[in-house]
Image (cartoon, rainbow, N blue to C red; front, top):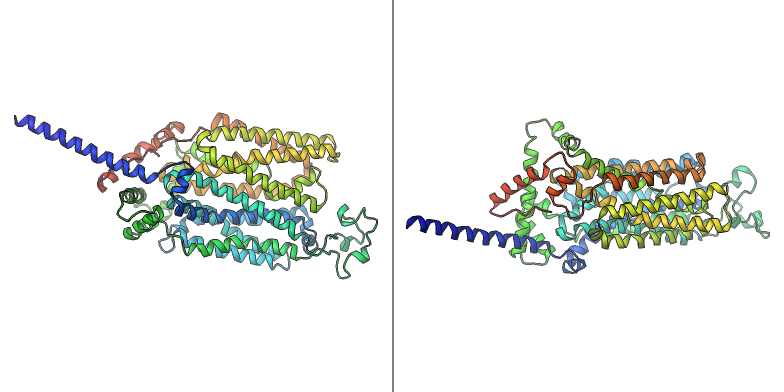
Length: 578
């Protein structure tokens, strides 16, 4: 009789345990919320904070695109004759990118400092960026430009590493993927805005200009500068003390306005919360709970807030225990251990796929920095017309990114990457063939065709590698190596950007413009093969499924066992399939 009573008690206890587990799981799932557009409206404060944080992406886009438009301005070329040399132009463009590589590598460790955290490290980086912008705006010679771009590059590298981490730590899990793509949308918005700003400022002072006149003693300018104008009279139409009527305000204002989103972001930071994860890592649970309650618009002791506090606390404990495994090693070995782990069996393919996706993001085609030059090669003549065309290019780039934000979690990553790579390949091949067939002197119809396919390239790039290049690395790495892996892939994209920045001007003159387009077309073909035969689909995969997609190690099994133990210690049930 006692036996049956004990068995009944055990069954009752088991049922009660299952009820408690179900309630805990329901609480955590409730904390995640809806993953649709409805979820954005359900979380207005966190959406506002995250979208404000993407102003850093706007700074990146404006800085990247401003140099292309400034380099096309006659007043700038008149003030800085050195940039007429293709190699010097390439180095000037790349100086920011080289600095950004170092900024992205030091950004992660610096932002993890217990004295700063993500929020205040972003604040410092924004101040450094604004300093770099000020130096470029006030530049008196090319050394100032180099210095300003290096300072701004260090800040941008740190921001591109730190801001996505901040967003992921304050946003609920259901919105993280969409907000990563919003970061790319913000970058394209910055590119679009600066194109139109530079178009407007290019009219300041007038358009008659030719920087070569002062050094060669003869007029060799472009048609709109008066070469084919019967009424053009150099002594009357050019100022007596120079060879350019266009004001230097044209390029100085273009540089200066980059500081506006940075300043707005810097002011907004004082009203934005510190990362709850960072607060919990310092043991400030009460403050972290209050921050989460405000972000989720709930009471501090609401069951949803309780569930998320436990979830974040468990992740903090997990990362601390991973570090404890290397506690017996010296400081240098401990710092290098995560990097070593990425090159071990089972992680090498993850690293390759994340890094190569970021590499192809730049190598499937020239970025927005060279849009004016490319449109000129395709048939748009005259700086004013090219700048106007570049402004339209920026609008198309921005608009084409929006569908990816909406469908990437439904369609998947690989289909968009394959479609984008095929489209880029066809576009490059047609433009290159037209340029080669007409020996780079395109008649009007051929020029218009080339311009259309340049815009097609813009669309196909914007729906595929441009946004997904930022998203994929955050998914493929196991939890214990995610921060390190993202740091490396971010450095890869800046490095690739630097290579394109240095090489494109020289390639245009060295292997001709059609050879340059064939070069990018070849890399687009590589992107097609990579997306079809190597890259697995990562949409909606759990940690265990990710191990099957990247065989060779049991990261998920090991990590889930450790997390389950931590949740047990905290008195909760782990729900780790995310």
